[in-house]
Amino acid sequence: MRHIELLTTGGTIEKTYDESTGRLSNFGSVVRQMLDQLKLPDTELHIRELMHMDSLDMSEDDREAILATVKSACRLSDAVVILHGTDTLPVTGEWLHEKMNPPTKPIILTGAIRPYEMTRSDALQNLTESLLAAGLVEPGVYAVAHGKVLPFPGVIKDQQTMTFTRREP
Image 1 (cartoon, rainbow, N blue to C red):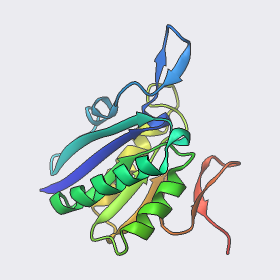
Image 2: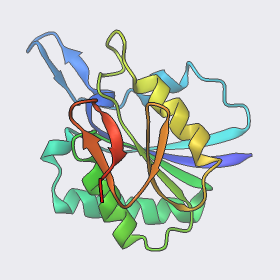
Image 3: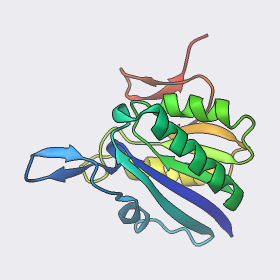
Image 4: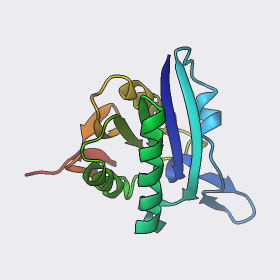
């Protein structure tokens, strides 16, 4: 049995539509709805709802809270998966890579360009890929999305293709 700590921080992957304001916002986690669609018989997941925010609003204190939670989660699990907003996912990934050096477990960051509840969302694909990668990669910090597993440091969000890639040397 594989044990994965799944941390939620918000981001587009978990945004929901608020009919009263007409806006997409982070009100709470929707990860359980996503997980209900997956068959994971050999995986035990522990979900920690850490925060519900757009990653553009994250502060250094928020990243410190993520770091402390990841350190705790690494003691209890085989891997950690973090749902995170894509805009600053590379910032948090670099932070974790620097502060967890060397990581003792796989730490996977993922997000989505379109919220889970929207048509043509990449949320479920990216979550599924992240859970799979968590059991396959060596200890380290990774961004996983759109069929790619990219190790930190050097991951960036490509604004033209709207996915993650490696920084050019």
